Image 1: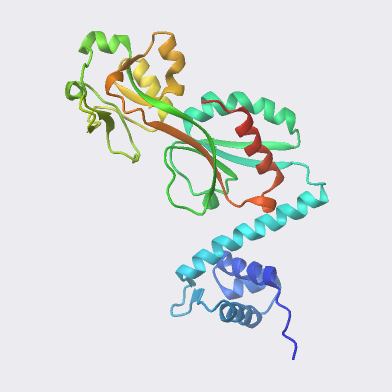
Image 2: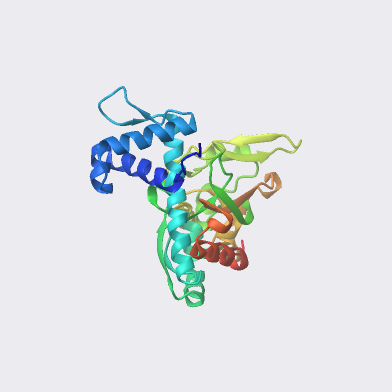
Amino acid sequence: MARPEINRSGEIEVFVRVVEAGSFSAAARALRMTPSAVSKLIARLEARLGARLISRSTRRLQLTPEGIAFHDSGVRILADMAAAEREAAAGAAPRGLLRVNSYVPFGQHRLIPLLPRFLERYPEISIDLVLTDHVIDLMEERADVAIRAGPLGESRLVARKLGQSRTVVVAAPSYLERHGMPRTPVDLDRHNRMGFRFARHIDGWPFVDRAGRSIVSPTTGNALVSDGEAMRLMALSGAGIARLARWHVAANIAAGRLIPLLEDFNPGDEELTHAVYVGQGKHLPARVRAFLDFLVETVRL
């Protein structure tokens, strides 16, 4: 007896619609199916996968951990299919709305100055740009690409490295005139070390002592900021000492508006910048692939 043909994309679409609608009956109305047909399809899908996706022990629809993972993958698959169909119909020319999220310093000093070139090269692409130093969920925010600084955590996202830059501790001449020049990391205990409002990979500033041992100086100043650009501006104003990627403050250092501090104790660590996104290979929308290739080609840190 021949096995019935399995419409995997149809199953995924129905499952995703059930999750988004919040019930079998609401999904059935949207799909113009009967609730029993939707219920049977979900049961068939679970049987084929050998995993329970939706808990039926409560009146409210509740996903199992396997259901959450399958939903996330399903949303991505459906989006890739839709993008593939649009691009095939349009000859795979990069076009459409590109949603980009970037940490603030990179967005202001590197990305925005490059965007006119990108949009001129790809006139059928439009940009929706959000700048924030908070790490977002790409699926939840419906972002195509996010630009992130620092080490990447474990995730299902794909990453492309855009560059790296040595970090540096800096302060304005006006601050140093009032508070003196720190000569060793221990001297920082008498200084205002500005910090960020969000969690960092290392809780403090790393240094090496004269014996080559690693030490960490905590940020215990009277100022917390939301992003690296605010930190740079606070340092320029003379509010305190900051630790930032050198590319971010190189022009200020060259102009004498910020002074590098404790370079003999700098461990030489570097801040990496990556573009992260969902999906890869032939399923990546042309607009996303074009943007990633453009960044790799043009960004210099």
